Structures are given as structure tokens and as C-alpha cells.
Image 1 (cartoon, rainbow, N blue to C red):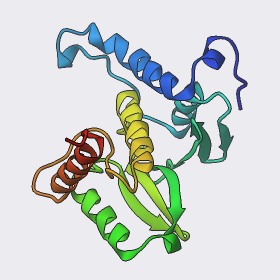
Image 2: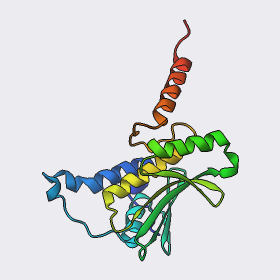
Image 3: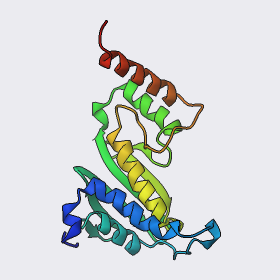
Image 4: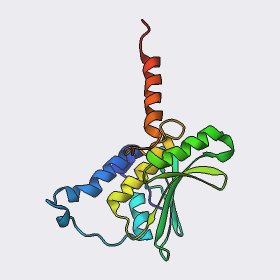
Amino acid sequence: MKRCTGFVCSVPRALYLLLFAGLITSSWVQAETEAERPASAPMSGERLAELIELLDPEAVVEGNSVRFSIGERIHIAVWDSAANRMRLMSPIAEVGMLGEALMFRMLQANYDSALDARYATAQGLVWSVFVHPLSNLDEEFLVSAIRQVHIAAETFGSTFSSGELIYGGGDSQEQLEELEQALDRLLSPTT
């Protein structure tokens, strides 16, 4: 566990995530073509933990997992190097607190608006989860995964979005349009 020092302490964690994303990708911006992008070594659990500690210097690494925070939200990353798998997740709510309509809406979002992050249930909780082969994960995709898991957890119960985009053919676009119309009605001055 590293302690917060200097510049990192003065930057809110949510903003630091954006800075982290910029630092990771800044070396690639100079490459003129995709082929010129520097090759990186396969991701390992140790490298995953190191990158997360850049995001949250107070992250706690225990064995094959690291627990960290972005703002007030807890996140957990676990990996199994032998199986070449990793899971990034954030708890959202107790399953027993959700009604059938909310559970149904959560499944709809998994189809078109949660994207790489997904909603799942385990151990009596609803989670925002990202699962991926460990060795194929690069820094840029890790940043995207953390962002998607965080946003999907934060938007649970409202837009159910991972924040990236919405695929067509599902029900989320209609749900979002209905939400926007309702907000427009609430925010429009009465005439």
C-alpha cells in the first residue's frame, strides 16, 4: 500500500482517473499509425495492481486482489494468472432491495447500454462487473474498464449506462428518450 504524496493528493480521485487515462495514452498520440503504437508486455496481476495504485495511492493489495476507491465508490479487482482472467467490480445494492421491474431494466441494459461492463448478482448483491483475459488487457483498456464499471454503478437506477455509447436494437434508447422527455417537462417553465 502506497501513501498519498504531492500532486496526487491535491487532485480529486475522479479527476485523477481522467488524468491517468491521459498519461497512459499520451505516448500513443505521437504514433502516426496504429502499427507504430509501442508494443506492451502482457498484463500481469502485479502490473494491474501497480496501475490501480496510481489511481488510488491508498489501494489495498491482498494476494490476487486490490481494493480501491474512486470518490466514495469502492472497486475491487481480482485476477487469476494461471487461468488468465481478471474481474473488475463495484458493489451497487442488495438484491433484496430491488423489485422485478428494476431487475428487468438491469437485464435490458446489459443488452445495449452497459457495454463492456455488465450488471450481475452474487453474494446477495448487485454488482457492476467487467471480466476479461488478464494477459490481453492493456493500460488503455484498463482505464476504459474502470471508467465503465464506475459509471455503470453510478447510473444504476437511472440511465443504466457505462457511459461509452448505446448499441441500437435494444430497449435503452427508448428508456433514455422517455427520461429526457420527463426531465424536459419538469424543467420547462409552465406557460
